Length: 243
Ligand SMILES: [Zn+2]
Image (cartoon, rainbow, N blue to C red; front, side):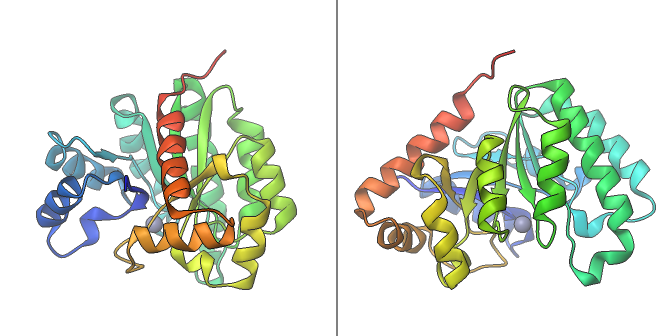
């Protein structure tokens, strides 16, 4: 089975280099997201020779605060060095209410820079903020300029439909399979827009369990779903967007 983990925090595991080795051995196509542009540098160095791991340049919305300009400057500086961006987005939870204005500004700037750079692939956090996140994507990152993968999406079905119109993919977190809302959402998502993710180390589960869960939800075989996810991954990363 060819596995895909399109949103994983490899550097937050206790033994980073061991985890890299493990993912390589298991040949899991991985998007290692980072939470700050400085963390990206280290991740990038350690996975230089990796065949299966790609590192995304991130600035996690939960870490955005009043000193965001300095951090964003570093992010902008490194953008030309990678095709992948994440974890970025907005967290609308009460705990991060105080930084919401900064978060929106940062996400907007990130989308504008990605649109200008063209052909970037973004892993986007939209917890309690799907509507704002989608509105900003619609306004600042047209489909012809970049691709968005919504990580652990918990928005409504109309919001999911809007996301599909904007060309978004969805990386499915195992936790989404265990809720009624998640199951309902899955029904509206076409199979060619799905990827799998672990969000490790925050969620501890096997990707093959997620594949099994998806197979049940989509009334299909495990073999079919795993091939489909792997095809989706290759389609996504190989698509050169048109003008
Ligand atoms: Zn994450």
